[in-house]
Image 1 (cartoon, rainbow, N blue to C red):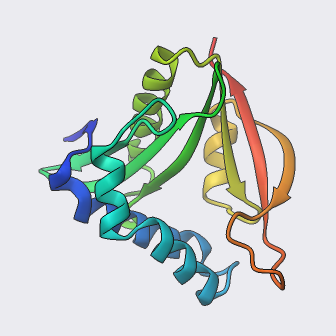
Image 2 (cartoon, rainbow, N blue to C red):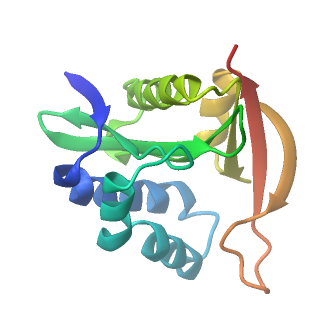
Amino acid sequence: MITVEKAGREHVKGIIDVCTKGYWFTYQETHSAEYIRRVVNEFYNEERVMREVTETTRDWGGYFVALDGGNVVGACGGGMTGETIGEIFVLYIDPQRRNEGIGSALLHALTQQQHEYGAIEQWVSVQKGNIKGIPFYQRRGFKEKGIQQGYANKEEESYLSIRFARPLV
């Protein structure tokens, strides 16, 4: 049985593992290996994830983890980017565990947290070409709002992110 809870120090290695595997699985066919390594090294290293698990604020509410028998099979996190605007910063599932409702359960936990913080709208950026993430968010009421340059682009790269939003009221 899958349970979702706020992540603690004991989940750091599992978060790193599931987010790294999920990122590679999601982007291996659309992004260069160098780009993927750059993002994974920046966001899913032990020092950063430990800090993000232990130092939570309204701007970064920490990670939620989906657990199966104590093993991390999914992770997500986000924060408030405005007085009433929540943002999903990360949501990855173990690629072997997709389509089990894990992503929905994690999104629900994060949405509840952001609602408690006063969010009435929720945003997410999804890399263009992400055929796993885009339909997931669209099925949950997110609508495309615009396109912007990818977060980790170097000057010679032109990866794009699609901005999606949905109301929470």
